[in-house]
Image 1 (cartoon, rainbow, N blue to C red):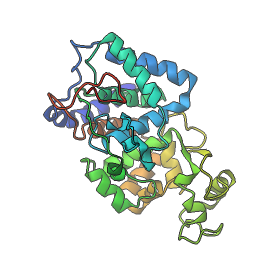
Image 2 (cartoon, rainbow, N blue to C red; image 1 turned 180 degrees about the horizontal axis):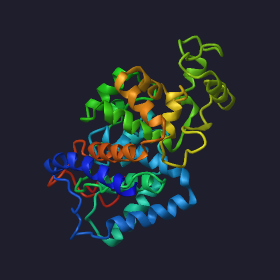
Image 3 (cartoon, helix red, strand yellow; image 1 turned 90 degrees about the vertical axis):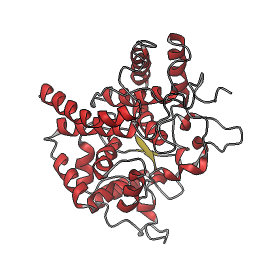
Image 4 (cartoon, one colour; image 1 turned 135 degrees about the horizontal axis):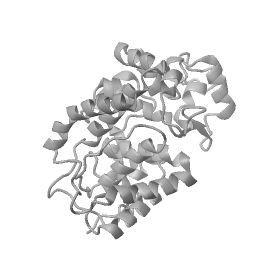
Length: 327
């Protein structure tokens, strides 16, 4: 079974290799300049997740949020004195792990000064977050450089959890991702948690009436009641809920089982059942019989997303600290 999974991953990754080559990304980019970079990153990841395994989901999410805005250029990591950077925008207010990324960057800088970009470090962190959560492993094409611009208003490019299928496909298409990538990458919700306010309108304000009976009829009733027991009102801004109850620290196919039963946490999860192609994919993998296939698909889609408009060659810079530009 392991060899079959490896073969499937190899075939799918070969399909995206040409695209990565055009963008000047390749797996051995630091082969001479920083051959230890992946070992350094993984050492820090193992240490962090052994202490706080729930950090895996947020670190994966951070890479998503980086790539959907200005491409995978590390712009989500930049600070702004006047609070106008991407990380200051509402969709990124719940991101966490910025301090950890800086610690990894410092460790990489110690090993290989002025060599590895924050954008590449974030891509490696995301891969290891999945793999160390018992998900697939893939070889990350490297060679991204760091951007110097980060604008909060540009986070409109991020797919909101309230999106319907049409909006989702449009936002994914903007970074060269298709419907298959959408359903595959949505399964990143198999690890991590979410604040109530990201979905509580489905419980109390689905049509704008703001009362306990104004519910999303597409939510499975027992699941809805369970969510209401955790999220007491629309004003709950602090409670965290597991996105994949029971296995939110393990990367698996349980996400598809939940969505197929109308127990997807977000509007965007439920939207996968409104399209024939994505619904069929959900139902196939809800059986749990095709884990190797899904793992291969996820690896391929992550590489494809990681190739979203990167800065390469002489573009951008290699930041010394991920939160500030060099000049």
